[in-house]
Image (tube, rainbow, N blue to C red):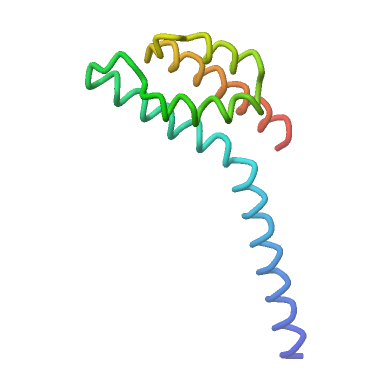
Length: 104
């Protein structure tokens, strides 16, 4: 009887771990966008009007897979204007949140 209880607890624990991992996997893209939003907002707060190219490259790689239209908007921003990048990231976040709501 004790052995059955231990097996049951282990199964429940493994199931909880799989659910948590699946949830984290679904939320990872949103976490990335949130991090980038925070970085660009910090740039704006510090009066930096230009987003550094390494950050643009990182965001572009993600957006290319997410939404071609948002990717093109980001890449067409030759001046790397912080406000335009922020707008693209907000749209990406909205899209991801809608998708997450549909799968929840």
